Length: 302
Length: 331
Image 1 (tube, rainbow over the protein chains, first blue to last red):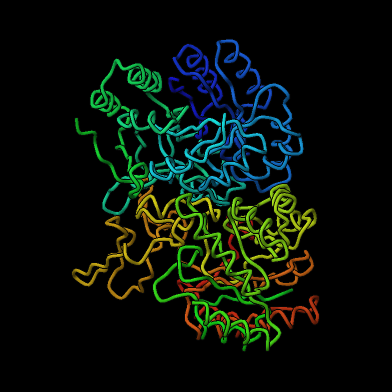
Image 2: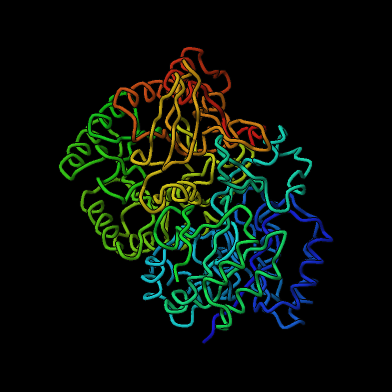
């Protein structure tokens, strides 16, 4: 079985037109699965639930498998309402990013879903439990290594797919506080949607100028982009089914293309890595995969 | 409202119990708990002694098994759960779904508390853990406003415990990989955050610099007090402005809103700090005991005493305190 490519949900707050344009293009890209929706901040409403469903319909029409991503941190009653509407949309499966979603899904009775990267899956027992609840696929949490994944794969229930993020800034943390608003000396309740100004997040550097982290509202991401294009043979050998590319503001078409060519054996790992370099202006990381600090980077040695 | 205090050692356990804790929580000496620090935690004999001491004073003992068992080490966590059950502790504090299910199946009569590390922030999430694993109490992550805490409790099928004092995690507990991004070790996997072995201090021309695995966390001017380089509490550069971009060194302190927490139906108030000294635990427990007693006697006329706040601020990170996310403006 060849591995599938997916586009993760857009984690930044893009203008409505930019989102529509992005997915209009993505419909023609060689990706198999598209995750849609707002997973970070419920205040971001440039697109309404119906808009997302409309995009979902177009992408499905273009032959993509569509999954609706749901909010990773749930604090307010209104957010539970939105989550419930997503879970019961009746047409597209959801990616559950919080246990509240699991509760609604199990109440809905055996609906198939994707266990998202914000759920803590560290052992086979948890994987089995998620499968019993209806998860047909799970996404590896960012901090897990190749060896931890291999151990989990050995315990993976039959028919459950495994997805790993192989490109893009890593989701590292969530908070009640909006750090973008804080950087602008604004309280979250009057944030003025400043995150709209940062389609790739707001860079946070050390006082020595090291590009360290990325601020994305209430989310903190890695400063550099994770890049596992050179590990495709290992990912395949471990039995990974889906490779996730996390959207960024520029170069996504080419990034998708590079992964597709690498998957099809038309592009060697070193060459693929070299081509992706221009799309990673803040550098690359792949430490987590090797069981090392996530920020570390070891280029491919051919 | 129960007062739940940290015990990183037997002397700390005694300090907590002797100063009025209703319950203490502790961990085994390994990665099965989220304070897996050198020189901390309990061997089996110490736990037995601790349980006797606590019981004699009418206090409960909880064991924290609140890290996420990795598949390859799974049996280490289930063995820890078995040991906790055999010891006859009053509850285990667990985060991982798989381990919760193990506990529910193998030790159904052992009370299960959902650790803050499980990140249950809504009544739907709590409902899931209550139904699937029979958890009887949930510790809320430090991300909810007071209004949201009220909402959660109003709809929660089980008891709710909240943090009352101690170091403040500003990220949702159990869902923060910042430490492993920098050092390879995180609270979830290894029970540590910004581990001491990755810390380096540099001094030059009176300036002190703190690094975590080489990453510059903070720079202190001559005479400026320096704190432990927890990586979310360093000073960084965002758009050219150097500031505590995520959070400053500060401690959570809920004394100002104890009556509100009581009226909201909070079952227990927890003190963070198993890594702290017995003297610290004694002082914090004493102040919180006095405050809780005063509040429960007459919540309408309760006001935190200036000397309580002063005593706690002396012990607080950065010698200052905050309500954290409980106060909407903080968010």
